[in-house]
Image (cartoon, rainbow over all chains, first blue to last red; front, side, top):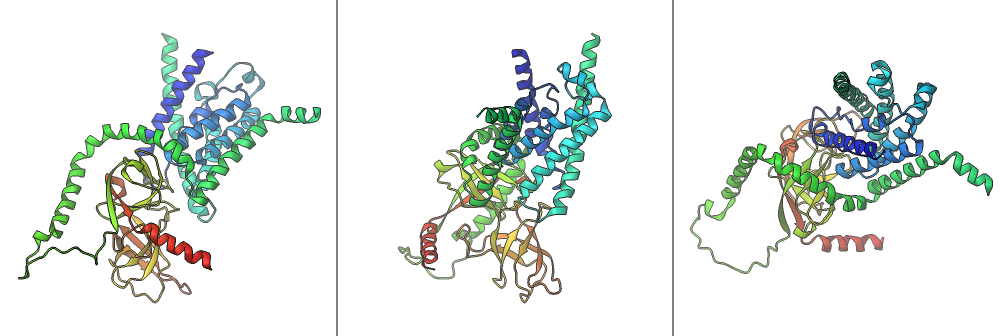
Length: 175
Length: 277
């Protein structure tokens, strides 16, 4: 349990650092702003208590807000995504998945399943985030374009990252 | 009572979700509407310290460019010094100047963190309240306007950059003093748009846009950019002007925070006017 806690903390710090130091500095266009830190919330175990997921989402958002001078923005979108995730998993996973502590990752559920899962939730997260950032619907379609492009890039980066870690895990198992 | 407890037990996840979401929206609402930015005052110090460490490491890679831009600025300032002018016969005498009173003070600072591709971009600098910086002060770079200070901690300050949907800077055309408001539409960090310039104002390409004297944040005449393109839709009262910004936000490293010594006096006077009406 304690080891689990440290693993998660380590993962969290690594992902947040990657977002802040690498992803945030890739300034491709004003239409492409990927946020990959949500992979931490996406890959929490399926059987984790719902209230804990919502709480973890809240703190993840709070950390991101602290480092990007945007009070409430990431918090609101992360909490929303964390809450929707509970229902998505309830419909998209079988009962057996709930018996063990399975993580919804590429290695466990397959690339297609993960792509659909990540795209849905990332889109919802970005939807809330980008419209709250502009704080209104006065640039509706421009913001929507921004959301779609950013979602594509976020999901791409998240999935590639997953594939990389999947390989590493398999090699270790063989040894 | 039992029903209430049962209800709370059954829907505790939803209630937790709802209260946390509500909390986030309240902070967001306060920040957007009242510019209180209190959240940032608490968290800013932690984040800025982190970015300072990162910046200390990465700054070495851009030292050459920083030096070049500072040398260019030095050369320009030297050209404005008295000994760069030819004296045309009069001997200069020192007098206690009561006509010109200093109104603006410049505090130099370095950029610690910066973004340009988000819809709302912020800049963090390495000087704070100990250096005399307060919120709502104007910030300029060596080429032109950069943004407005939003929140300040002891050693750091956060700036709402001109590339932000909430930043509106009062500007005018240098040649005929026609007023407008500089607002960023979120497309390209090299360009911004000048709004509310009346349609009868004559415009040509490359007209210089400078800050106006209406603003208490910036001295009059600080350069902002130049007119890149302009158009006028039929039935519209205002020009659509695309302004090419002089400040290159992507490579911004050193900035000056402007302290308006007479600002409080002006604000107080205007406040008194408002309460009269």
